[in-house]
Image (cartoon, rainbow, N blue to C red; front, side, top):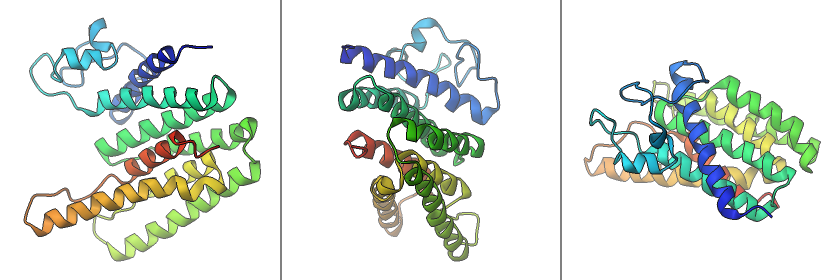
Amino acid sequence: MVPALFVFLAGLLLGTLLNVLIIRLPRERRLLGWPRCTRTAEPLALWQVIPLVGWLLQRGRASDGRPLHWIYPLVELISGLSLLRLYQLYGISPAFFYLAFVCAVLIVTGAIDWLHRFIYTFVILGAALVAIIAGPLVGLNWVNVVLGALIGGFCFALFYLVARVLFPGPGVPFGLGDVYLAIFIGAAVGLLNLAPALFYGMLMAGIVSAGILIARRTGRPTPTYIAYGTYLCLGTILFIAIGGMG
């Protein structure tokens, strides 16, 4: 049996690799190559690449003193905890690797949406295609998977159209990226699990939105939008972590 600590450390390392995607995809840089500082663009020393530890030893700051974003160590921590929880639920099995892939896609998508308010179509739809192909190989019903993708996309397409009518300006709360994300989530978890998987993320987004509205009424500065896709990603990861996939 693989020690749980080893799985957690592997998850932290995976998080470091996911951070490379999170940093380089929006900047259209080559995905291969040694990591560089997001502030100074200098190559990182080996100790700086160590998951969590590197960020803590730098005290969250680059060599020029500017702060490093907190989302990068959080990505590593969520990745480590996700793999550890999947190992506890499924051991080293096809389901473990499949759901590790799903969580990795959700982590990357959620982080990029938080930082840039953007969801990459080719990434999320490509991942949905992988889920449709791989899902039945780990025990998911193929019809359930396809219907999950179709109904998830259809429901969020309706949300998107309604949001466009109600909020015609640039601050529309839904984007097409959220529709594509719902397609991926539906394909990844299947139709029967779609509603509970989306529920957690929508609940989180609703609570945050309510908090913003309350703060706005008191005259406090508030963000003009929330990264809705980020909450959908976190909610789906939470659903998987509590054993919702069975």
